[in-house]
Amino acid sequence: MTPLQIIVVSCLYFVALLIVIYFTRATARRIVGAFVGGAAVGIFGMGAIVFGNASGLWRVPIVWTPFFVLLFYFGLTITVTPIYLVTWRVGRRFGWRGLAVCLLLVAIIGPPRDYLYAMKFPEWMVFARGVAPIIADAVAYIGIVAIGHAVMYLVAGPSSADRLRMKMGP
Image (cartoon, rainbow, N blue to C red; front, top):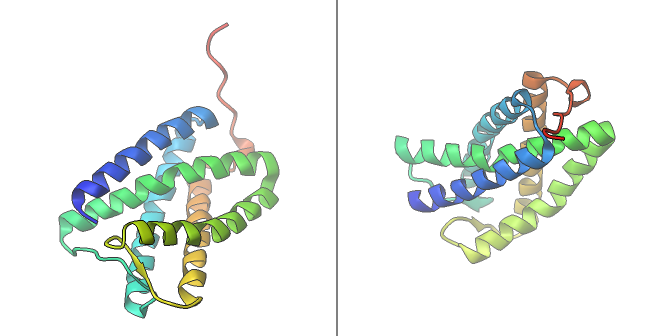
């Protein structure tokens, strides 16, 4: 993945984040919590990539220069942040059962998504053969959602305690 590709993907996800902010009617406190959750998961994601590379589960080529690593980390943070605003709404509406369904869904949907990206952009990621990379990818997705949501909870409080923003206008 080139720096330009990371910037383009990050910008697209930032637009998605703005849309999610609007539709979830997130307060400033919740937005900050989602960003902090995203920052924590950026570290987790970098660790998962390093682990997968080292164990031979997948190969994600990363240029280990400070600029590239920081850009890649920023990209990871931006791409996951919208998830926590959605899980906040799910948690508010359905409680822990809804969050459990979210974890199950990302474990099921995440690996095929990554495999599709790997087929379309093999210079970004290549998976090893077998079921182990699929399971590891599913576990990584569960970690991405669980850790980010937990950090957002610690920063912004429980979703049940958050008032929804009132609509403006008549």
